[in-house]
Length: 438
Image (cartoon, rainbow, N blue to C red; front, side, top):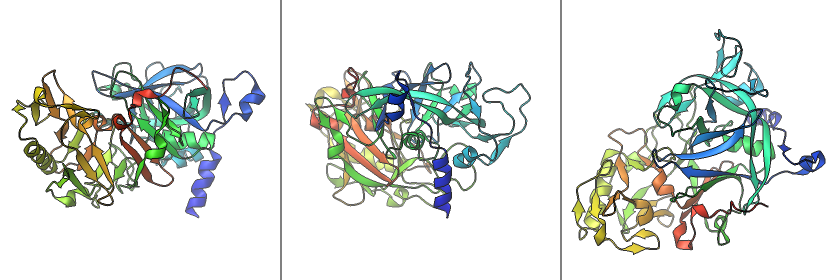
């Protein structure tokens, strides 16, 4: 009965598809199989940014990509003007879908986006600074490009995309010009679920972050995920289950909510095929939601609980004992003279680090391009940072370790597909063909 109820809610909110083609008949018949967003790395904050259009008239909105974020939130206090904005009224189907359990009743100004009485509210949070507040749930039009997996296609629009209004102070700590955060998490009003509902495609998405100044991609929908020179990465993925953390990891949440972030079951860590001695109980999620391994785009580097961090750094240093160490450069703890490190197709010639998953034969291999960070022309550092004792999550796989790896998140099957380094295949995440259209 519960699943039928959720279907009724979800299906009742399947959003009308509009395209920007001049022919209405042609627009009505066009149903994209996937959508694509460009993703660029901001050099000053190391955040990953995307842009799509929202409101009437349409305005380009720059957003920080938050892989595990609950939903889209934008600043409604500064210059949010739109003739198509609609507040989500308390006890409506939209509020039920969002799991809101609060209702705004004390807005004393004239009604406007972010300030409407009888409107359900949620808790938008800046996951970079770990700051949260309350904000109204609303709907408005968004517009972005479709794709066939090879090139961008027609621009399509979703008239009633649900999002939360944040406050201007929530933008503190985000990249210059950013107006909010694009939450790609597991929530029913996360962008992946809303887009798949709007266009009736698979509840999947893929993210491929570029290590260069060129754009990477997020593709909502199934493959192919084609990168120049004609490599379909979807055909060579390794799969592991996504697991649920029973306790929300957001700054603010309602009691009983599960985390919307993406956790995987890392069972051990190996360096140069040798297991690192560590407290494996930290790799499991306990009843309070502590422990485990999650994937994050808001952490620039992988963060390890202190005892795991010390064990990994010690094991790595012993394995590369012949490479001269130099003074550590914050936030890293182990740095080396790069003149003594060779180069390979997959980056600096250092031992591979394996995150061993559901069996010894299934592992995510991290090569030098993802394990090492060039802090200067002469210094390379191991790109892992100390997350402190009693860390909420024991291993947070950060952005640098994700670059030039394609990750597919299958929400329906609760499964992660990952490519490991695309450099082995002589391609990168910057090689999606944005220069031509379907």
